[in-house]
Length: 252
Ligand SMILES: [Fe+2]
Image (tube, rainbow, N blue to C red; front, side, top):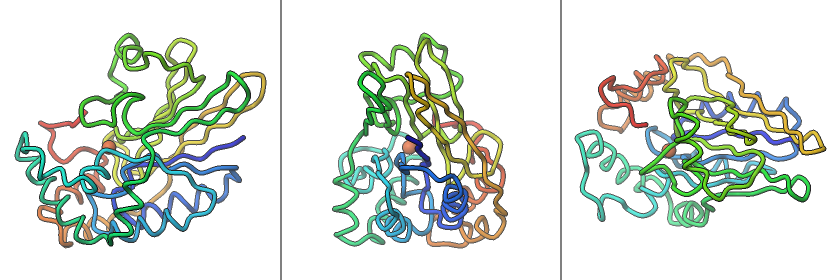
């Protein structure tokens, strides 16, 4: 069984189109969207419609999807000016979505599991196996020991997540962890959108790779700069550079 995975679309339609055009050529059995369809971008309603109508596609929810669905601004105080900016964006993102779209987002599962053969599981989640990403994450800089601490009780051969906006394939002991993110904007210095391919080869063996997609970012960067989002230039900067907008504040 062959899977394509992509995540952290963040309401960015052209990057999503570029990734889906590349995925179309991979002839996979199943596509999986690994959360964060919305927020940090101008067209959440279009991205939700795109994914809902995409054939053969399963979806897990991301932390920022839930910020909008659960109206996080009503239950949490912003911890920083950065969060205050995000809360306002979440409020306005919600206004652009229909009740039906919000209901669909609310129904999305926290994780998905596929059993290639008995004893050979592929587990997919947005942030970590036990937390959606508001409190913890699996960035590459974490030591093997620290990653293992997040994997308590997980027996899957292979896992895939999003959230950290830098694609990779990492071996942790006998297990493999794939980061598929991101479509909308990267934070690892390479501005190209990414996706991952995971394939079960039989006999307990899995193949995993990440791919980057060529994308001319200038038009979409200036669209973000001039859209309804306050300080859209921060998002434009991330789309252009592949780095988080504020060098003093990397989220993970
Ligand atoms: Fe996220």
